[in-house]
Length: 151
Image: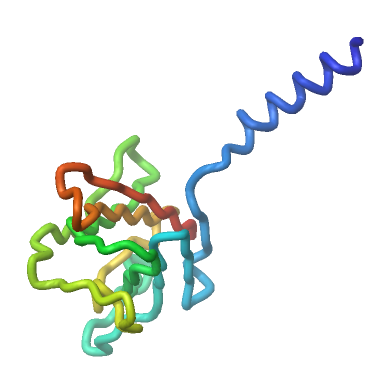
């Protein structure tokens, strides 16, 4: 009987210590690709070589967001944040909310959203990407998925 209690306790403790959430990937290894049933996020080298990183200050990256689900959707918003080791809150890198010009085509292999260059502090350890969308038939309900890339 004690064995069962100990087993249940350690099983419960493992769920607390090792949460099943978030998608983590290392930014040091580029390209870094993460995907779910709905989305595929690619973090890669900057697409515009004219913008140089500042060593010991920030690195430059690009981001492609591709919808891989099978429903008709409308992309509402893409947000990117980074952490700061000296604070408890995140810093916004960019937010794109005016998505009226971005059309979704299930058969297209092109990204539904692309950000060619964004700086990422060398002190930051985490890049958080938040995607918000609606289903074409039900624009009253918004859906959100969060991706976390670790450095």
